[in-house]
Length: 435
Image (cartoon, rainbow, N blue to C red; front, side, top):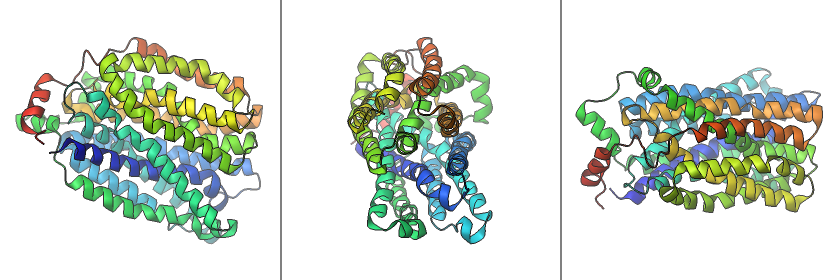
């Protein structure tokens, strides 16, 4: 099978999954706080709306257990087909929901339920997309291969944000709130059909094929993961927490922070976010490739140190004018965080053996995601109490980064010591990567 097709299948599904997920995040402040959670105090409406945003993150560990079990028992490919259907179906149905004005409390209840299903599906998608790439990777370029599905985050976010912005520019405010916001959600059905077609044409990964043929599949992956690999799970959780809070801020909450507390227009805030994401598209594969030569751990530590040092300056300077917002979004999101994120899929997956790799990778990552997903609720309360204080917001970020930095120092250098067995690389070369 052509390696390029495998990478494209990994990336395509990832883009669409994150398109759906971040589409909701963008719509939270623009639409849902008004149409589904009306309140006389806009801050309360926003707080409640972001609670539903966090609910999607909270549901991701559930999905990691469900789909991790399936991925380690029946295969990576079949599991990834199901996550696509779950994610796309939820987004499509959100586009059909009645509003609070039409059905009262039933509207936000249905929205939260669908958001939870979104989170469950995404909880299984990320780990599977990473493994689809890394378990096909020839030895020596696993970092590059593992960085490709990570491109789904900036591409999906830009697509989700752009779709809402484009519809908003083509409609009046009244039309946008009445029906315009629904179009990007309904369009996800078309994208899901396309991704399913792409993924249906690939084979199962070599690592899983070997486990299946040798009869070494785990009976209950989640139990075996915590029995034999619990340290790796907690390593992943801790390593993700530090950059995770900053990631959620830089890629979603910054829109609210910039418009509500710094006085920027929505167009300026979205432009800054787009600049950061565009930079990531270049940075992620470049750093992924570099990690195959100098190691994932070295890059990860360097990224965390830079993020720690620039936390307070970031919050200080973005309030000084649009040009500073653009520069710092490009630097913090597009370079520093992108360098960290580009290595995460490969770095984390290398901590687990093949028989529980889907479960271990997904559970650790998604537990951390569930924690950081409630960041917007915390920041809304902080902003209401302290305003856009650089020391309050910067100090919050620094505390999380410090935890990750300490854990990273004691983490193994997976470029040298990896749970991807040599025999898998041999199996891979002999049986699967004939082009």
